[in-house]
Image (tube, rainbow, N blue to C red; front, side, top):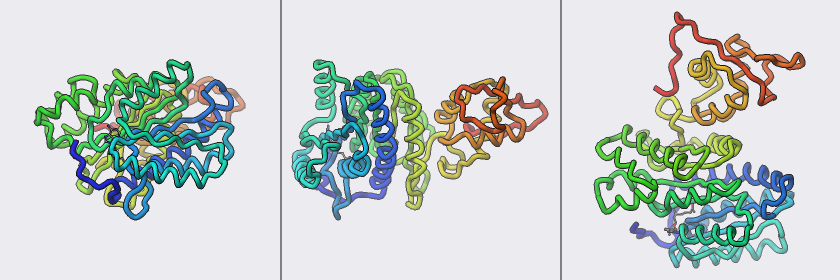
Length: 384
Ligand SMILES: C[S@@+](CC[C@H](N)C(=O)[O-])C[C@H]1O[C@@H](n2cnc3c(N)ncnc32)[C@H](O)[C@@H]1O
């Protein structure tokens, strides 16, 4: 893909929002994984963060790029960790890689003898090739790759393959946070020279289903087919799309989060909810209500959605949490369960006598959601 920009260029507001999400996720992910590493042991003695499309490290006006966002966030967190955080940065373009190496050298010199943060020399190379090399080295030396987060922040849509995501996710406690630019893709979709790249990104040809479609229908199907491929081809137990939309509610780009751990998805959704909403854009997810707005969603809306979509079902609290995380915009769900119990819509099954009413601290607690009476009007669903 043509890239006429200078080595260091201005950051647009969408980029800053993306960095904010990355920072919020790392703030959550690093301490959780550091604690787990202490308990589980045998995790290769470090937490790994890989930025596969690192850029120059900063934007014009000394605005930090994703490598500096990760370095700063890790630095604020890692002093109390037993295991260090290791940061690996990859950048293809020579001028950006050189700038990045200079910036990293400056940061490293400020670290003194900090043993908790290891910043490797940035690699000038292709993300896909370098990550395959890294995984192969770990396989050959029988060292675990995880816990690791791979941030794949390409410019367009075809700079890494579905195979790469699959190979990363085969490793325990490894997650992928990736970017796909719909604005750069959909206007050129009829250009057959682009098709090989799209097929590489999907690992198959099923994306062609969208070729005859337009507008929102095209956006939605493309996203759904890609999410499906992340699950079926790359083996992501949980894959979740977040859209950055413009003023006209059109998708600019998607961020896709893939994890094999529901806790990872919970923390990523919390990070999304933290993002500054004051700009002329917003993040949303496909389950959001009006105009795809994530932030207008509240306890009442979730309670109504659960009442309507889980009616007549018996589930554990953990199963409801997974349902909420995968099928609604929400990340917190207990107050919605309390709302349902207070209204007599939800009943605990064989709860211990010691359980306080409206308490959902036990994930294994089974509950029943009342069957809707035929005469009651249907609640509006989230998915219409
Ligand atoms: C969207 S920018 C990354 C911005 C950076 N992650 C940030 O947020 O500050 C994408 C970067 O990937 C680089 N790039 C393009 N193709 C690449 C490849 N195959 N492997 C590694 N880097 C690549 C580009 O030169 C560009 O600097």
